[in-house]
Length: 169
Image (cartoon, rainbow, N blue to C red):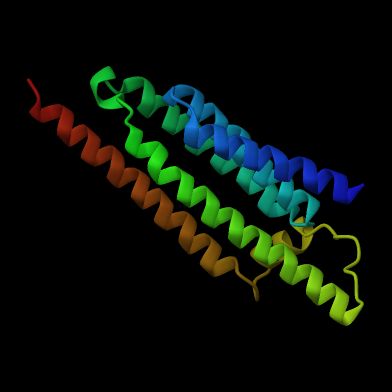
């Protein structure tokens, strides 16, 4: 069952990435990016990294793509012209990425064949990561430091945005 789900999410990821790279409409490409990022979240879940899958879903599928769609909608039509250069550039990139994916797959298959050890079913990781984040002897201090840093960055971004509005008549 895990093999089927892995292949399903891998197919969603690859199909979304291909549509994103080769579709003529930038809005459709942005929605294809949503599908590709959702497929990556599913890949994380099938590999047992449920915390990373949740973060992928919240941060990238939820946040970054909304920001990207707003940027696309606020962009003028003149700056969204497509050229043949995009297709000429994307074909080798897709080919090289496919080559490396096949090499990695063959390497994993060779390692399993050489050792005869097949990995067991993935186990959930969210509880262990949460306990490490909140334990006083774990990552509590770096976690809180990053939270304060992100708050300061947000305050700085609002300050810079307001300063730009005050100068315009």
